[in-house]
Image 1: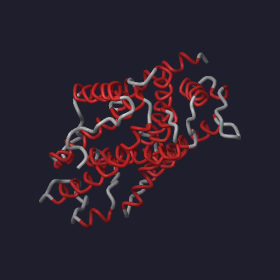
Image 2: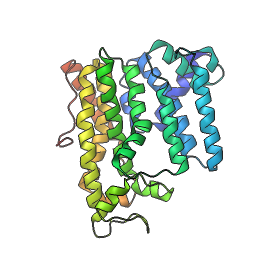
Image 3: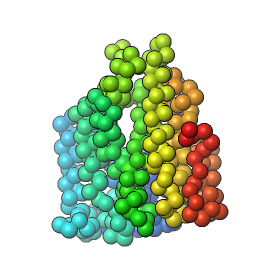
Image 4: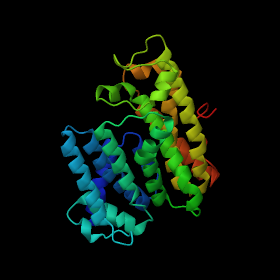
Length: 304
């Protein structure tokens, strides 16, 4: 398959489905933009299996198939095999991207582990339990993205990329409380629900304000992970820093909205208007271009 056509397919998937990440991915130089689009497209394939309408067993079989596709893509020494992906545009692009960049393809296996947990309806007793899940489904994406961004000190950067992924996933969990409940999923740790006297027995509801207090508590926890993860930004080149800063900035803005009106997440899914996302992306790019390797500053009030 024509690699250029394969990358175009991945970019089409990314621009149409990555409602938040696409703003940051577009800020990268072309080669990195294509590579990260390939990473996103394969991650999206995995997520769509977990979130789709197939029966549980069929989902698990499909996830096993994705895992085998990944294994076929990687040779015994961990390098992309390239031609093994022939015929599938996403795998073709991903193989080429992994050949050009130091992408840790094994991290996709962690993403699949997390999706399998979703399919099986795993719940989380403690925050440490939830943290393991977040590192599987989002920390993995942070480390995969870092492989595309590149860094002179990967040993320092990888845990920071992981932490930034955790921050974004915690924000997602808060945003999607009601939507997840309607599909039979509860991600908030049971110990936190008990601490605040909350129960989803009759569905999430603002009730007497206890669940809103829980949301505020979890939002404060997410801010701590942003503070840790944003230390990644100065370690990246200017365009990669702008890209990562835009992605993080959009989710931080979303967290600010959640904190301002915590009960809103119990009524429906919150999202930022496109113009606000674009503004965050433009500011991230400007910060990178004018400040060189200086950190991209988070939105005012996002980290307290």
